Length: 128
Image 1 (cartoon, rainbow, N blue to C red):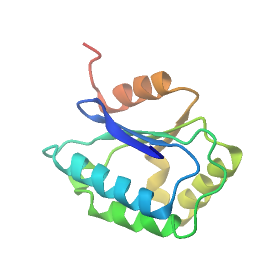
Image 2 (image 1 turned 90 degrees about the vertical axis):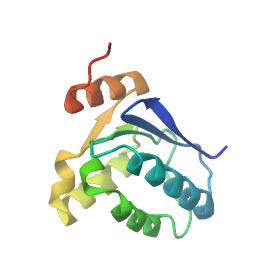
Image 3 (image 1 turned 120 degrees about the horizontal axis):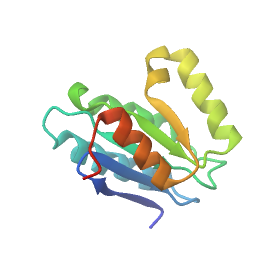
């Protein structure tokens, strides 16, 4: 499976990219994840975005990001990029410049476990 989308916890979603993947696979994964997030009633949802090994994206993939506008505003939450390549970090800096509100929502971590801990802290979720 080129893209893994599943719940890690009740308000923490895993979106893991396994390069190479197609724009079609990304489109379907985004549709699935938006549906999952919007099913949570009026609570911010954090996302662990595992981009390990991602250097290139297929043609048309960046345009798929427009779909994220379909997330219910009350569900918009932080995203932690896991093992992001410097090129991916560069794209993130561009996004922060073009759309400054994203700055508070994007974070980085070296492992999925650390990403989950960071999201629990940001979202005030007990590990219990």
